[in-house]
Length: 280
Length: 317
Image 1 (cartoon, rainbow over the protein chains, first blue to last red):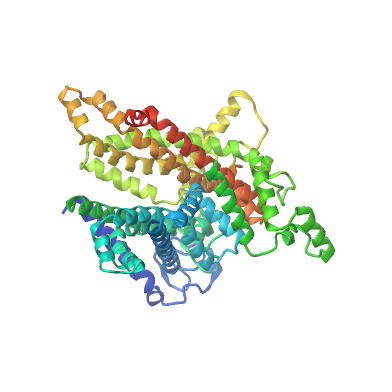
Image 2: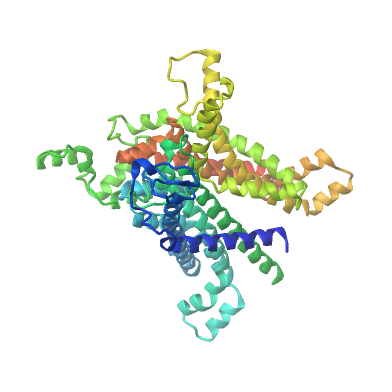
């Protein structure tokens, strides 16, 4: 097995393990992880410490004495859900826009592509900041805004694929058999044009998780008391010297998940490119 | 130019479709209905939407971005104060990212498949996956506070906040040294992330080129070592030029966080401060300036393409 395939396998295992751990978080956290107990005695405990009640904290505690492992897992549910939902919605929107533009062409195509180009000219983070400035920051806003600012690349890729597929013989064959235009697009063209969009969506998960963390870090994303990796890092900001683990643990979670998402995305892309070069 | 107009239009539509009445942000909470109506007229918000759109577009094209709600100053001068800081941060780190990233990518392509290659790939992927603000916090913890605690010599204890030491404004060489010392951590964080991404691209771009007949021919002519490397880089250069335009949005995003953590008074900080203070005109203005920067850099990359790529030069003739 090559190094690339091995790292892809490891990355997939790590992501699955983290996803299972976050989903099962309530099962491991014997006590309510968000509950605040003995604040004075239990706050900012170092990793591997026991609090006055004798509870062991693998990653230590934050400034309110909450267990960091439990909170990182709980935050992971929100961060992963936001990242995946944002990327999937963006991918779906981009595929829809790209397919419509590439299939219909004409005025609709020009209009949609002009919009795509205009939005692509604004750096995505700036676009995100603009949107959260105009709407109330909340979990739902973050997901919607991630979708609204992440679809343009996918739209372009899908449009190019659909335009390339239009000229293929099987499209003429479907037409000749009397298939309706929409049916041809859905059943014949899109399934063949979906590859690049899927890769872009997989790649998008990592960047969506990073952007959510960034927005939450600036106080514009997921709002406390709900935990996300971004606002946990922000919470450790003032104690970064005396208790670095408060920021370190959620930050490592972001790095590991984003890194795995990149590796998996790269592998998907390589596999797609390989399939391409084999079948002429 | 057409693209910029599209951006201006999209920003206008977004701003107008947002919930909340902008007038209520300006007047005091106890304002009467007439005061609110007066403010609305003063701001021109009672005009039909088409008229407002025409005014906004014309203003932007003339460089008039409105007035900041928080400070009462024109948005243009607020952003003009912040722009040089961001240009310095972004420009220098983009340059360093390319220099370091291409060098790393070249080393990897040279020893493709080796342990060094694998280790650098993993390292670069990890750094590229790290949030800029998190790296920035780590850098402060280690190089500012950690260095002081461990009793490092004063030269290695790097300042973490602002562009200059708060005490006085020394001139000449001291000023420059002070600025450079304040620049090390922000530039370092931004460059590390940029170089990590660029080394990944460079590695695969060079590997694509190495298989080409032109490179085989060069090898056959007996070129080796540095001269062969220059040859390969020359062929890969057009691809890397495109990367320059692609790298800019990432640098901008990174600089927003880096400015926020290191308290640098740049565009990114101006924008985040404006968002937290609901100072919408500044937010809209900053968005347009960022878009203009991206459009301009795309244009430059397009124009420079024939200069570095003879194939494009021939094709456009």
